[in-house]
Structure formats: C-alpha cells, structure tokens
Length: 596
Image 1 (cartoon, one colour):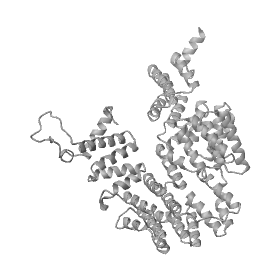
Image 2 (cartoon, helix red, strand yellow):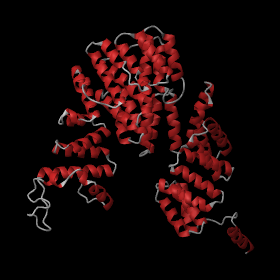
Image 3 (tube, rainbow, N blue to C red):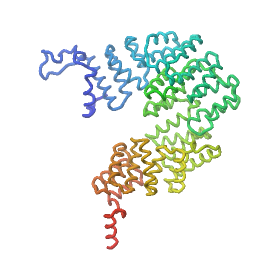
C-alpha cells in the first residue's frame, strides 16, 4: 500500500516512535544475523524473518496512518500487526484502541478472544458483553462481566446491560434491583432514570415507570427516543392528555429537533392507543441509548462515541442508535464515519429529517450542488415539514441563490409570526434573511433583520461576525463593529473567519499595522479562504509591502474565489490599490493628480 516513499516529515513521525513497538531482542531474536552480534559484519544488511517483516510493515502503516489522520487505515494496520503476534499486549492495546475509535467492534471482539480475560481492556469486555446480549446468550453476559473493574460511568453502563440480560431470562425483579443500584455520583445516577423506567415498563410495572420518566423530565433529560417511548407508555395506560402535553411543546416548534416529535403528536391526536410492545432488541437499544445520552454532558466525547458504537454493535439496524451516533460523530468532525450511519436511518424514522439535515451539510463540504438537490428532494417529500424547509432556505443561502433564499426565509418567518413564536426561536430565520438581503444590496432591510437576530442571540458568534463585518466593510459604526467582533473572537478564538473580520475592521479603522498582525493570524488558521488572503494583500499594500501584497492576491486567485472576487483581484494585481484620501501621503498624490 505504501509504495511511494513518505516525505521527510512523515518519515520522521514514523521512525521516531518505533522503539515503542519493537526492541531489538523482540523484533530480531530469530534473525539469521542479529543486531550487535559478533557474526554481524559492518554494513551487512539485517535480515528479517517473514513474520517479523510483516509485523514491522503493519506497525509502520499504523503509525503512518495515525500521523496523516486516517483512523480507518490505522485500525486495519494495528489489527494486522496484532494478529501476526497475538502475544504482544502492547500491539493488542493499540489495535483495540484504534478499532474502538472507528467503531469496528467486530474486530475488537475477535482480538479480545485471543487474549486472557485479565488482559482485556474494559471496553473490549463490554464489546464481548454486548455481543452475548445481542445474540440472546444472557448467561454469558454475567460470566463476561463477573470480576471486571470499570470506571463509575462504565459500571453504570455494564449494570444496565446485565439488568436487560436478566429481563431476557424472565427475572424482572432482579433486573429492577440491579438497575436501581447507585454509584453515589449524582449525574450518573440521574442519567440512569430513563433506562430504569424502560426496564420497569418491560417488567409490566407501568405506573412506576411513569414516575421515573417524570423525574427524568424534571431533570431536563431529553433523549428523543426515550421521550417518544414515554409518550407511547402514557397512551397505553389511557393518559392521552398527559401524552399530548408532553409532546406538544416538543413538536410545535420549527427546529430540527422538533421534527422528531411531530409524528408522535399527530398519532396521539388521532387516537393512537400507544405501543410499548417492542421486540427485546429494540427495547434494550432504546433503553441503553437513553442512558448514554443522559451521561454525555458529563463524559468526554470519545467515551460517548465508544458507548454509542457499542449500541450500534448490539443493534446495527436501530434507527434511533444510528441517528444518535451519526449526529454525534458529525458534530465532532468524524464526517467519514458519520455519513453511512446517517444514510442508514429509515425514511419511516422520526429522526429522518434531522439526520438528512446533518447529512446535507456533510455533503455540502465536497459538493454544494448535490447538497442543494438533496434539500430540494427532502422538501418535495416533506412539503409541510418546517425543519426540511429551513434546511432548504439555509442551503439556498449557502449556495448564494440569495433571491430564492430570501423568499424562503420570508415565508418561514411569516409562519413563525402566525404561530406567535418568540424571537429566541426565530432568530436563525432573521439571520438567514438578513444575510440574503445584504448580499442582494438591500442593506437597510438586512440591517434590521441582523439587529433582530443579535438582540435575540447576543452571544451567537456567527451573528456577531456577520453583522460586525458588514458594518465595518461599509465603514459604519466602526467602534460598535469592533466590539462585536472582539466578542465573537472571545467565543471562538480559533476561527480564522472571525479573526479575518476583526482584522478587516481594524483596517477600515485605519489601524493598518494591527490589522496586518491580526490578518496574518487569520491566514494561518484559515489558509484556504480566498477572502482572507485578499484582505491581507490589501493591508500589505497600504503598509508599503507591495510585493508581499501581490503574493497574497495571487494566492487568493488560486483559492477558487467568486467571479466578482476574481475580477477585483486581477485589477489589483495589475494596478494595485487606488490612493486612500484618508491617508496624508495618498491625499497628497491625489491633490497632485488633480492639479495636473
């Protein structure tokens, strides 16, 4: 796979870490010529046995893949190295961690079965447990977990797996007792409430389950799958009014999250009697999902990913799990892993619109036109779905189809006003319409919309950035613009786009040296944005660094600018910037020109 010689950086990265995997006695013990032996001649090649050479190559591949941020390739390479030498516990640990990162739980299980139980990592033990539970081998669940030590959060996860296994054996009281055990850590014990409620419902103790769901709601736990099950439980015991009261505020707002509850509310209003008779696999997946979602705010994102991957291994076709895992991975930059999970969510799932929205933005990064087509198709199939229509408006705006976007936002705003939505709920629509109107040259209307958005969301960095930049670019209210952009930088200190806006506002304020420093930082954080290079070139020109200015303008041209930007850049490369009458030296030049 690696036929081409890696560059010097990659080579250094690979070889610098080799001692962590191989010592001379281990890697070369069976070689015909041993390192440091009297038989070795100066300059003689060191010969590797085939097995050692294979491990060496696989380890290099694993380190290289990690160095170039290719987690899938790293997982394959480390697993290959481990299978060449399954007695090497360091290779086992690396291979397990790499395969957990990409959710390859089948490989984690295969490797775990080749090492002694005491050597298995905690999450590998959980993977074996999940495999047994998913296959209905309930007694093996207890055997696998017996004697294992976990962190408090993993202990909670493991106890609930064991409780669901007891349910599968018809031992409801024991399952309830086990799930009721506390860790002594309030956020973990609170997180278990919905899962405990699901266990009580499965054990046919609905009123106790309802009480726990109510307690979880009081703690603002909002697992979509758990809340939908709760609404069905209420309907199943004849509490229709309570079910509607639960669902109405969740469904009757236009956000993407709200779309997950619209179907459930419609069924409740149509007289649905509720269905809690899920098959065992669905019930376990949803119950465990409520636990993971409730724990996620107090746990590192990587642990949430690992636990969600375990649930996907337990029930690969669960729409609820695939939606939750896909959205979690997408929100943390694992786009390649997220995409197939989001695509797997069924058109019949309540989470379908939310996952298609997330998927559209992933596709947009590589193919804006295809993302727009997908948004149009989603609206065509869901013509009254507010979240789908919002996605289309946002996608039109992102593709700079501003007239169509402005009309779409306007229609959505009218719907929100008719429903008496608050500014806190509608500010994204005003922000979107304001941006479209600004680009259409309708600045007074745009400014009104953008100020409405800012008033409703005063610490939203995108709003602060857009409004601050728009004011600065026009030379209006520069002090206010600088203050907004400083706040945006505080909220997102590593955003190259926001630093560019602040640098441009400094430039417009005549603070050229400060602007140059800020725009250089922006260029280091966002090296592929044509606008940043364009702005930096302008600042260099005004500070007497004409050659550097032309270098930046040429770089901006290479970064796929818009047609309008391209034309402006070509003029600047030919003629430079026109004199600035606000600067004394430039004013003198202009005066001399007029006198001639």
